[in-house]
Image 1 (cartoon, rainbow, N blue to C red):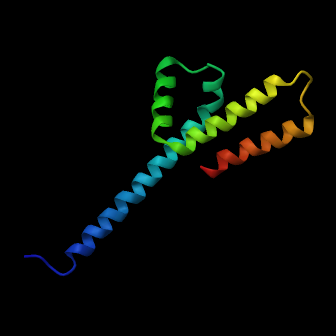
Image 2 (image 1 turned 60 degrees about the vertical axis):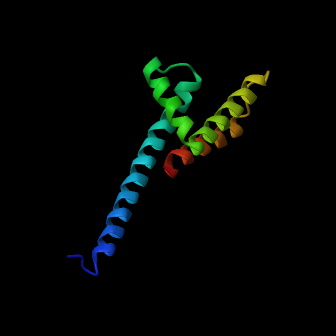
Image 3 (image 1 turned 45 degrees about the horizontal axis):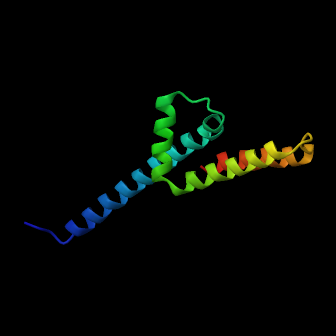
Length: 102
């Protein structure tokens, strides 16, 4: 026998599932963000790099973060003199802020 609150129960289960999925996505993104620099430097094991790339294929936000890191690294590599200390400090603060978002 179906009761009037059966759809409500289904909706609550759906919400809990969505919350768990969002929590898992954030955990995966946080882990991926911690691997961005080692990935760009070529310091990941092949299986780690493959797992990282699979995450990037599925996560637009992390892919955009990777592009920002690539752009920054490319810009810094193009500089012929030592980077400005204030700019490096701002960059470090920016990167630290990225880790706090996730």
